[in-house]
Length: 220
Image (cartoon, rainbow, N blue to C red; front, side):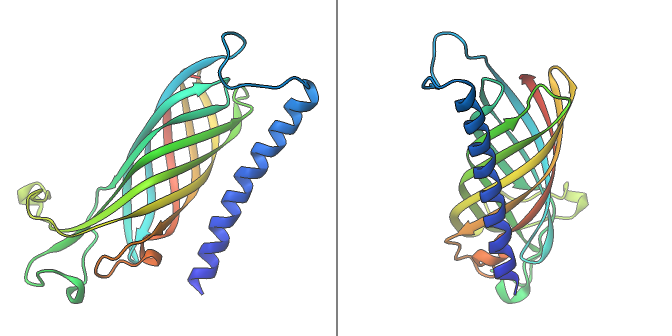
């Protein structure tokens, strides 16, 4: 039952993003029948911004906190093209039957990095919508997570069951202009994984809804 619901959520977010792009493009065409181009020597406002984001989701049925950053080139107060990266910061325990070493406290690490695009509707308004799409590589490994006395960290040289796959994550945000250079953007996204073969982590275990809180800084 979960798979159809997740597929519908993913399809809905993609359709919503496509619809937003289409509606804005139709309005622009109505106002000006001339061909519009992305690269132009004049008439296009350019800037850029970076974002700190935190995502609340589940991986393998357990809560996962994903801390991330993204940023890039922002064109005409509408379109961002940039790079994004995120990783889990909390313990995601590996069940004993999937653990490479059941005698140790093994945890899953999750990360993703790749390209991000973001399309903003009504950027100059105090409150508006932003649609984004992440596409890139995801990975998981098993590692021994130490206790608080050892800084609750892990040994980067003792990773096991390395697993790589493709990730697509469409999302939508309600964006609030706090200052000219700062925005707060809570939102929701759907992470879809393709090609995972890790022990205990199928595509369906890695695919889920994320609830996001994001701060953006830059020239909008």
